[in-house]
Length: 182
Image 1: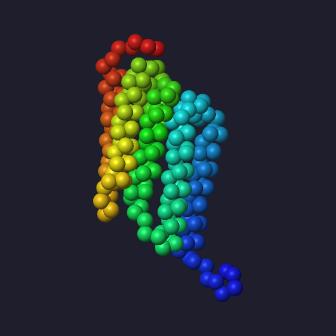
Image 2: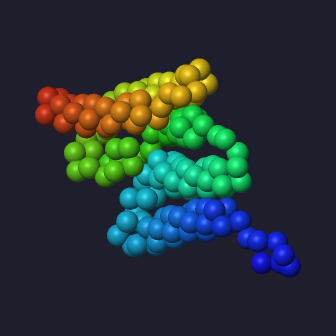
Image 3: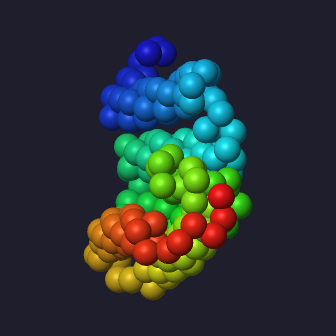
């Protein structure tokens, strides 16, 4: 507190809380990269892990910026801002997904992909198309949806549906296709 100037408590609380979340996420990703048994898988994941890392920090920073702006008195439509950030991240993720190596499925290692390159390629291509469509829809909803709408609820529902579709697709392909590639 400087002479006679009170500290803006909501602004200070928002800054401290958001900075703490960003710091904790940064430490978690750094520690994940240092765990010896995970290191090989992180290297195999390539861009998928990088988009998770960057995306997590970008979302935390977006929360921080929106929280600080709200504490400063700006009237922002949080749901639309989050839809823009998530949409951009989904499009980036869709670009990186087919480029990651086998054994990774949306950033998660599954045993079925370790020995089935054919299943991995088909699932990742299909998943990349669906993620790109979801990201594009998120951007369109953020741009054109009415101000009082909640585009993130739709985007989160579509992301959950994509997870179930991709998992079901992988299990179905693993059970029905013959081993063409080793």
